[in-house]
Amino acid sequence: MTYRKSWAEPWKIKMVEHLTMTSREDRVKAIEDAGYNTFLLRSEDVYIDLLTDSGTNAMSDRQWAGMMLGDESYAGSRNFYNLEKTIQDFYSYKYIIPTHQGRAAEHMMSQILIKDGDYIPGNMYFTTTRLHQELAGGTFVDVIIDEAHDTESEHPFKGNVDLKKLDDLVKKVGADKIPYICIATAVNMAGGQPISLQNIKELREYTTKHGIDIVHDMTRVAENAWFIKEREAGYAEKTVQEIVFEICSLTDHATMSAKKDPLVNIGGFMATNNEDVYRQAQNMVVVYEGLHTYGGMAGRDMEALSIGIKESVQDDHMRARVGQTEYLGDKLIGYGIPIVRPVGSHGVFLDAKKFLPHLSQDVFPAQTLAAEIYVESGVRSMERGIISGGRNKDTGDHNRPKLELVRLTIPRRVYTQAHMDVVAESIADVYERRAKITGLQFTYEPEYLRFFQARFEPLS
Ligand code: F0G
Image (cartoon, rainbow, N blue to C red; front, side, top):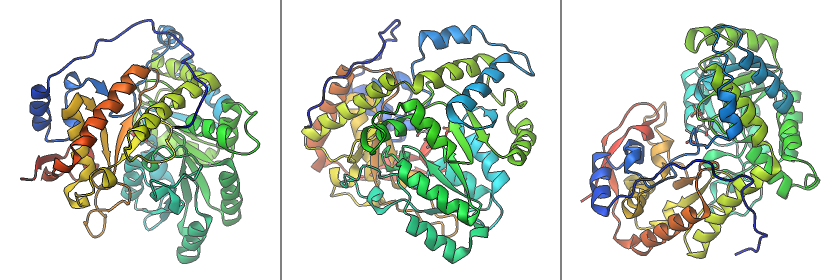
């Protein structure tokens, strides 16, 4: 275990929410009723909820005070102009369109920029992002470095783009078939792994030369910036705020799920520096979301978001945020449990292939493990493996991601270090009895984003 100086959260707790304590018997019944899918559990049946860091953040007293300043005018709400200015000041983008959450921004971005038959390279897929690219007629191509698919590689920037893979694609299909490359910061499906500024700068140079835009999935940009500060030469003295601004200013457009980094429970936006793209998005947002000065958000939510953006780029906040994730990761490593290394930003990712080596990917080891962890202790986690991978849009076969992971995702400012201890201990208990665990099979498989609503039964 590496020695680190203690960190502590730069806040104290003003209000508490009671948790439900359940018995093993209750949990066995609950997971059966949920078809062995942790997304289908009722939150009342969950003790520590590490399903996702999306919309599960605790807001600050200042954000709650901001909610009282909501201007719920249909058009031209003052909160919109505050949000617009905050995004310009902190993220550099010129034009913004609020949306109810990230995937609405992905929908508009994809429909505006992608033509049928286009290719969209990216640093690993994300579920909703790739689906919207496909629905717009595009084909996603993974151009992340190989190390990202290896859970044991200690590469400090496993979110980096492999420029050779990108160049091979350009040579194969032609730059005119590639409207943009999508880069995610703190790459979710790779385990919350960062991309370096060096890599983004090289990518900027390459894409400018070939007339390819960069779309930034900035859902966890401040978390990525923290890793740059800690790991990239020349950035130790820069603030998270400065690094975030620099990352954004190297890209052309952005989609944001504000339910993560910016510390709110709902919201998102699409941003761009291109006026024409902005006009088209304004045109679309009134069809799918709402008027362009609220786009699916209440005035009060936009105000809480403006404040949340400012809080999210504070160094002390990010030190505690990532520090807590690393704390849990180090504990699990201490128990000998296989996890994605180095520990990422927003969660600890268990390597289900190594945890349950006797199960083939066809019996869904990560889905199985998430269900077992819930039964053990009431801790809710999420599958990020073959079920999340979905099916190939042409052949209908399972996509078979190399990574078969269970994500223990940590909501921001919600749980304590003692909760992390309980989580680690309960996973160690499952690890002890791992040899007896058998797999699952589908009883229901939805067409889109199947991991959300699929149902399973245990293999006999
Ligand atoms: N991009 C990334 C990298 C995400 O992690 C998410 C959501 C989205 C886009 C879509 O945003 O949910 O606001 O529509 N990730 C959540 C998660 C669902 O649990 O990882 P959304």
